[in-house]
Amino acid sequence: MTKFKKIILASNSPRRKELLTLFGVDYVVQPADVDESQLENESPGDYVLRLAEAKAKKVGESAGEGAVVIAADTTVADGAILLGKPRDEKESRQMLEQLRDRVHQVYTGTAVFEVKTNKIFTELTCTDVPMRDYTDNEINEYIATGDPFDKAGGYAIQHSGFHPVSELSGCYANVVGLPLCHLYRTLKQIENDLHVEISALCQQTLEYDCDIYERVLKGEL
Image (cartoon, rainbow, N blue to C red; front, top):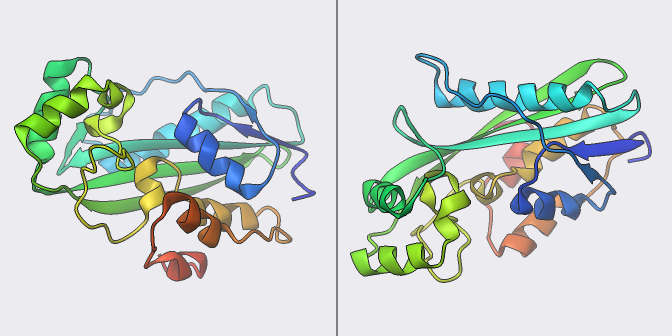
């Protein structure tokens, strides 16, 4: 990645920082402060793409010519309804009850802004997430951990105690917050000499056998 003189992650998410580290590159963190209000009649996909692009450009304004800014925005969607981060225990419980034993979607928009060329590259990833039929007591115990409060939809798919998802097919890293194969494909458009076994590293880290990574890397998804 010699072309990338400076990489900036426009997010303070611990999960995104952990996943980006798998690329084996040095980067700095500079969260972007943008208005995250949803526009009227805006679809979940359009919403996350718009915010990711806005975050990348915002940070890019002061990043310096040699910088590449990576931004992402993730939302949980139950149909057309977006579920953000719950404000309290009551809202956490409502979200978890709403999603229980049903399939919803997680959308992540990623944006990579190459400051030197003023080019921005975007990707949209969507994963169907089937929630298991967890009990009310499990909901209460999970809320007591405090974990739901900084998570869109009120849950973390990777939580070792709660395990909210039954069986997933698709991009697991997308649900965590940074779809790595899609990001790799985007970064290759800037630096063709980039070579990282990102799919293997992702699956090893998340302990998940991905069934779509080959198609993603080929550009079929």
